[in-house]
Image (cartoon, rainbow, N blue to C red):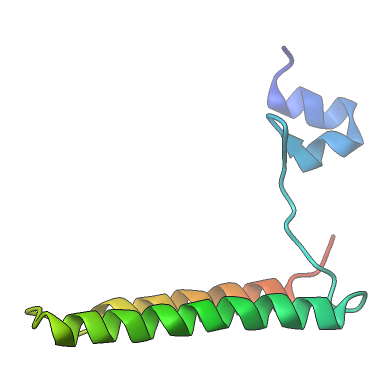
Length: 91
């Protein structure tokens, strides 16, 4: 089996495949603006539902920490992922 670097040099399409996995998960905003909007909208709905559920669970079971310790990183990383995904340009 060739080394990974040798494989990339010998096959230009191999940079997209590593061990049988297709790496670039990218929807082109210019080609599919409605599809991207729907995918991101649905993802943000799930994030909002998770935050509501966590806040309810923390309050309902009187947990000894604030729900923000879970919801704040969730929203921050989701926002970061959204910004990176929306600003990604294919090279």
